[in-house]
Image (tube, rainbow, N blue to C red):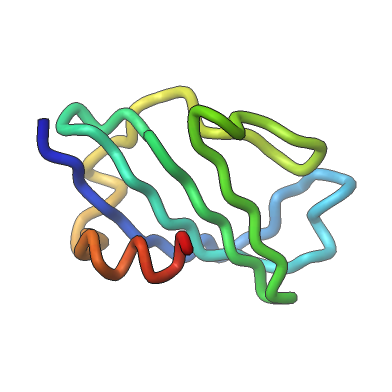
Length: 89
């Protein structure tokens, strides 16, 4: 099974009371070949970072996406495994 990696900027806030004031964010995803998310990173404008995976599925700020990514939403957003893990560490 070959994992895929994506980076996408979200030009809107979360709308959630706890994190909305943190600003826009950039998401990083590690997915399986069917685009199911294995790992997720969200970096906000205020430099706060949220990280989720199967061992850390949810916290008071958010959760690991439980639906596959829609590939048409991620055209030209694929990154390398190395780029993803530089952020993950």
